[in-house]
Image (cartoon, rainbow, N blue to C red; front, side):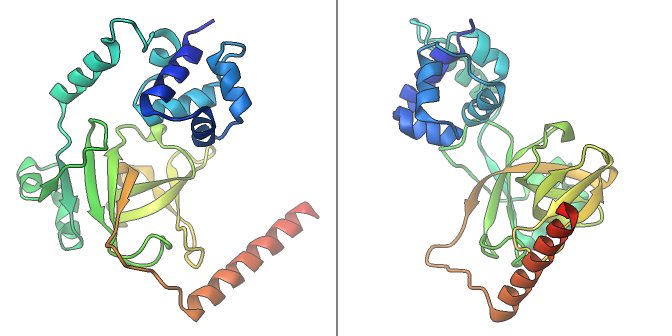
Length: 249
């Protein structure tokens, strides 16, 4: 058997989580997590993928490396290597810089002009922050800042997760991506506010994709829905239900 069960137990204790808390984060029953930790069952790959995303570890590391090595060196060395390779300086792209970003997103001089900040709770990586406006992603309020981690390969995009998508035709948008296995040349972008219809972008037009990691919004700000928005939402849901009923029948 692999050492994955031991690693799950080690990582859980590293964060100070109970089995109940960790199981809830993984979307599984506590009893199943217990079976994994006691090595009565092998953790499923989909569970290990969630753990990998959570702790920035690969499947190979979870399955083959003893993270709780008595010497206590593996994670600390790995963290030190990452820290040496990259810093957590996060460049902020405000709305007023959005148009210039399309031309300067790969220009070091342009990027150097952007304000930066750090967030200690993020693991080392390549991050950027984007200010968004509009109500297409309600309940995420207009004016929020989305901190995203760079996605280097579109194959790494996970369906139904939220991303900042930078494209030639649509500019900078914050959307939920739905992948279509039959149409690999397109990405379907979906708003959380169902008053907005999904639409497709060609992958050839996509300049950058950043997976949303954190949302920063102003305190004491509450986004309100107006009557027209609610009516549109209800109407849209009714249309979707009708469409599903037709397909079932």
